[in-house]
Structure formats: structure tokens, C-alpha cells
Length: 225
Image (cartoon, rainbow, N blue to C red):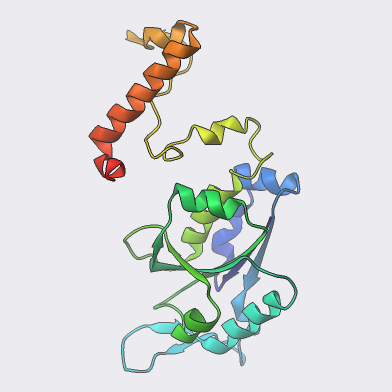
């Protein structure tokens, strides 16, 4: 899989893209991630890529021309499954969306900044828009990091135990059951007996019951419909 990220602050992506599971996936050549600094296409001594918006509203906007040049340069080299703009008014990102994106070959993630991007880019170049939540960040870099982490861990071969991702919260529409490790008793706090029974059928039933109970109690909206 190849992921291209367009940003005006590439340094914000350095840590999340170069450690842990994402770095392991790159080391295994299971994913390629290219970060493109939009300012390299800016004009003048200050490499300008933003300007005031028409209409008099406060805030700077990423300009249409450098975004057009960079996106069309990338899309002229290969076919991209999606060109995704990370924006608070996009479709809410969830586990099914992560599952879908992890099956694609090439995607572009466009990080907005300041007030956002010239709307003509959204109309003519962007194919999909994603939000990681109903709140506003200073830019799309953190959102891009969230999306990358969520999809890369699903690529076959990335996790040492590929079944681990299948038991994550939201994979079946429910929250994951409680999890425990050694020792079986600590400070008087005991691991549920069923998990020590060695009976796969009883353990599975207990996990399903716990998942349903926790979802009803903590996230009942997941059960609607």
C-alpha cells in the first residue's frame, strides 16, 4: 500500500509515522508513506501557499494553485483509489471505514491548515472527505496520523498476530470485552474464573456477554438499528 500525505507542517508527522506499528509496517515493505511539503511549491521568497479568503472572513486559506500542482503531479504518476481531505465536516471515520481503506492500493491524504483549503480543490480534486470527530484541530496532520495508524495495522502481515485486529473494539459493532494478564490475583483483585478455566466455549460465551453488556452501558448508540 502507498500513502501520500500533503501538508504544510511535515514535522508534525515525523513521530507518529516513524515509530511503533507504522514503522514496522514500513520496515516489512508492507506500506510506503510519502510526506509532501506543500511549501516547496509556494511562490516568492516566503514560499507562500496561503492567502486571505474572499468575503472578508477571518483566517488564512490554503491556495488552489499549489494544491492543484501537487495533486495533479501525483495523480499523473499513478492511479489513486481515493484523494481524501481531512476536515471536520467530512464523513465520520470509523472502523468499517478503516477496514475499507486498508484494502486499497494508493491513497492521498490532504491535511488542511489555518481556516481550510480553497473550495475548488474540494470540488474538483478531492474524491472523499473524512472527519475524525466533531471538533476542530489546528490542522489535518493529527487526523492524518490517526487515519494512517488505524488502517496500517489492518494490513495483513503488519501485526505479529493477525487475529488481534479482528478482536478490536468496533470490528463487530461492539466494544471489546475486558482483558486480563498475569498474575491471576494481585492486591486481592482476581481474574474472572472463566478465563482460567481453559474452556474455549465458555470463554467465548463470556466474552460475547461482556461485549454486549459494556456496549449497552457505555456506548448504547452503537446498538441502534
